[in-house]
Image (tube, rainbow, N blue to C red; front, side):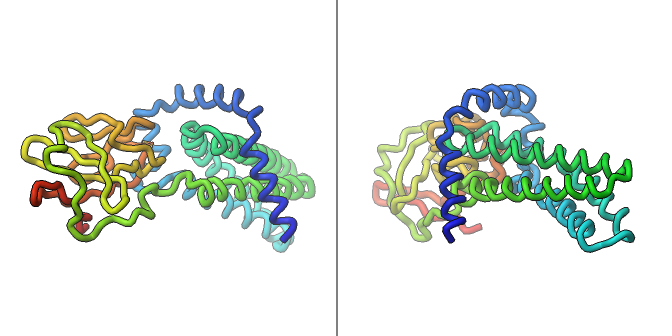
Length: 288
Ligand code: FES
């Protein structure tokens, strides 16, 4: 228990390591040049096409292959050597797109999340380097050295995975930012009818939940005001031809049904049914 508390304390210390920021900012700028925000490559690496973040899915392939190789190294004996070598090679190959997707995600972070991501990335890069050396040691027949390198790589990758878990499950990076909103199921008044100007993204609250209203002619639209990507207020974005662009990282959602047209968001924006009633605008969650 004490060890766990110390571990958590170390992670909190990383969150405050401002010394990392300068270097991280420079690297992020470089990544953003290679993978521009509004590009097909960004959508590909974010997982927009898949409807789910890509990086965490790919990590399973890497860790699965490396962990299996390690088990064969330890328990498999002579007969399992070839399979262990192949698994290390598979893990190394899978690591390349995993690192690319992770760096693309990390380039959007700042502050404590950026610092945690920096150490996570450094850890993963080190683990990958050790596994690459292990692969070459295996090819040269230096079995003992190769096993030691793989074992070290897995220890580093394990610590790094802890940081990755902390980033997602404690800091909320990569999770759907609208997942815990308590959407009104019944018709709920949000603002007076005369306060809803045409062609203007209008923030409002429905039973405490942030929503965003939009009127085009007689047509009314209502979406969650929280971007599913990193939670930025969508009403601060821009709308063109019923396409709403988030001001933070440029994701585009269809105003009509919240669908993702462009990433890095992967999850649609929740939408509401909306109507005028007794001089008020009312909303309720769209039944999907
Ligand atoms: S918060 Fe990143 S695109 Fe909206």
